[in-house]
View (tube, rainbow, N blue to C red):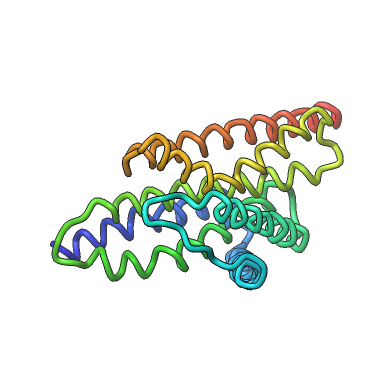
Length: 230
């Protein structure tokens, strides 16, 4: 039973990543090693972020059960380095725009999945007692996949010269929301008292909203490029 539960959690967490790689066309371009390189950029970026946090933002004593808004704000501000890392990956990737942000987003999300969720699933999901939190962790990894791909798309859109100037503030606002999402989640958790499943739905709704707006801008720009070509 424990092995079956572990297999379900792993399949739920990892199979969508494989499907995205196969169905998005990345496999046709043999982009596997490029995704691995994007994962390496993720690891390097996280190391730099940890060094900055440890050097300039020391931990403060916070009472148990309370929210350290200032500390979380600083951490989310340092997360802006992720945008730089994604831009660096896309700048080193040759190909059309869709290929660039898909490689960057998928590689980034896969590295995060392996580094943050593999060990908890391996240790916890094989336990004797069944716990829904590992199923929730697997669902959360799927949300993170969409989140990172959408963030990479927004970074790519921001650096496009042919992006409509009226869309630039929207892209910047969405990038800011993406970076400060953990802080927003923490505030909602403490202020509203969201449960684990409700919080997961809130994350999915937030990511879906940002993704929908980003995709609409991308499709609009692609359509405009096709019309100008003809």
